[in-house]
Amino acid sequence: MASPNMAGTAALCISTGACTGTPAQIIAKLRSDAQAFNQANPGYGFNGDPGRPVGGRYYGYLTRAGSY
Image 1 (tube, rainbow, N blue to C red):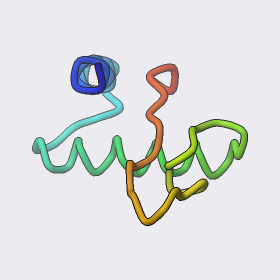
Image 2 (cartoon, rainbow, N blue to C red):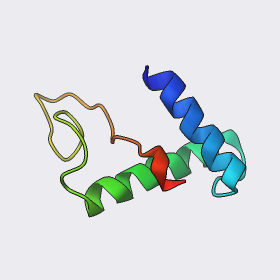
Image 3 (tube, helix red, strand yellow):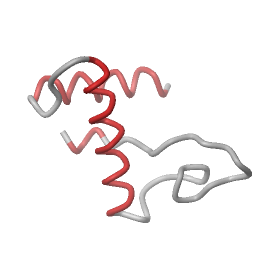
């Protein structure tokens, strides 16, 4: 379910005007927004995200669609 959730979040971000530019720029914005939100709210996230690493695995930050 990660792909449909990210696609929806990207569509929401684009529709509100918060994300503009090339696909690569939109991906970079979504990643940086997720990182900033997770770092500002340490209780948000999951085991295995960069704030709670698990055995050398990298899953990335949890995205929050409510930010858009």
